[in-house]
Length: 179
Image (tube, rainbow, N blue to C red; front, side, top):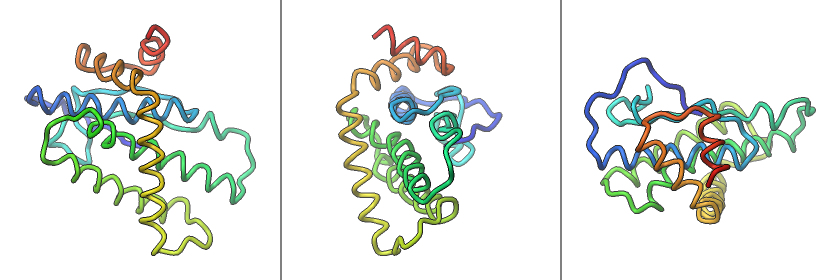
C-alpha cells in the first residue's frame, strides 16, 4: 500500500501522467477485484517514496480480512493479495504500452518492495529465500492475467484519472459500475 505526501506534483509531462494513470489504475482495480477498499487514486500528487514521479493511491484489505482468525493460511492469503495489488501498478503501465525507460525499473522496485514487505510483515513460515523470486514471478503472471481479464476497468479508471487527476473510492466504484 502506498502513502501520499503533502506535496502537489507540479509539472509532469503528458507521457508521465499517462504512465501514472495506468499505474495507479492497476493498483486500485486489483485492490477492488481482491476485495479491498480504495480511499483514492491521484496523478496530481507524488508518492513520498518516489517524489519525482506523479501518482499515488491508498487502498487496504481490512474489510476482506475482518473478523477472520489469524492463521498461517490467512497470512499466506493476505501476503498474496497484497503482493498482487502491489505488482498491478507497474504491470498495468507496461500492458498499456506506456512509454518510459523506467517502466521495467519501476516493476523491479515494486518487486523489491514486495520482498521487503513479505519478509518484514508476513514472515511466512518455511519460505526459503531462494524461492522468493519464483513466488514473485508466479504473482506477476497471475496479476498480468487478472489485469488482462479486467482491462476495460483499468482503462476506465486510467481515463478517469487523466480527466479528473484524482478520484475517491466512491467515484472509482461508480465509474466501474457505469462501464
